[in-house]
Length: 442
Ligand code: ATP
Image (cartoon, rainbow, N blue to C red; front, top):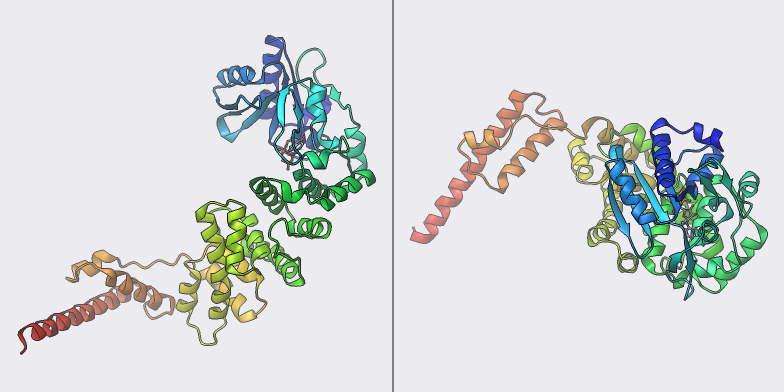
């Protein structure tokens, strides 16, 4: 395994070396565990350093953070801590622990244990290997359950028969790994998974935990495949009793998958796209608005996210219809698209194949998005126009003129702004005069 470690970037190696040295100084043993070891063997990249200490993980993490000038957050109840370091690096550190599940599908009771206990509480054999990083046996792979062989064979195998009953979120985790790595469930494991589903175990999990797993699933490279697999094995009623994996939904998800790269190729995004959110909207978009609210509440989405999801779904269809109108000016298309988030625009792209609509969105993304005018409220004030909501209206009219080619340069923008300001003042003056007339009865 030393050769695997040699592949790691230097800054990672120094974090691992520092943990190993600290463990030796404290007379404890430290191990890399979980997905990090799995991905190291697979040759993939994983930046989530996960360390288990046979000893006192919390005290270890504080000393580790002190040595590397990091910051710690810890959960004494679970014996876990996260150390945050410079350059956005973070290391999870835990005391080796044993878990027991007093009730199926509920959180476990945790107590300190051996490394073997700690590996035995894990989801699949491929995630239950450890790599020692301290002492004379540093670099040794510890593989009690045949994880390495399963990894080579591409097999997902649980560690004991009640694994999916103890923690049914492992069903969704398993599907995620199956799809990500192209692995298959070992036959007995698949039987246990189906049996847990027949007992409706997913429905017994705390909804927030299900939500987190669904989001992780939607963050995968190809969530469509994973959703299709979840739907085939488990159905989607654990998300909403009304949710059916119908062809429309599957088509939308496939379209989203195609449109995300299209969008990225045409737009210069100022922030990363929240892909999971687009897929989530694609997933629930066929439900009625009250049903979407119900899903969001059950999953305890933040109020702001709930509002965003519902309004995105609502706005999307209206915006597609508006963009499909025949004689739409460039500025009108701009004002439809400009207030929308990237996520809604991608959802719109997934809902239509009409060339007219796609062309308008492309024009917006490539050319008109981000268009600014040179005149400002200051110029309107200089004309003597008092500030008010009409400022925004006038500036929007100037922007439209620019987009439609009627105010191609700064001086024509200014000319138009001044003309509109004068018209506004005249209108105000007339209003003023007519209200005076009413008061005096002249
Ligand atoms: P990913 O590559 O998606 O991050 P990961 O395997 O690193 O996958 P994490 O959620 O970071 O997953 O968990 C780290 C490790 O903790 C896992 O590899 C597994 O050993 C263990 N683990 C996580 N969740 C569970 C669970 N629900 N049941 C049992 N073990 C778990």
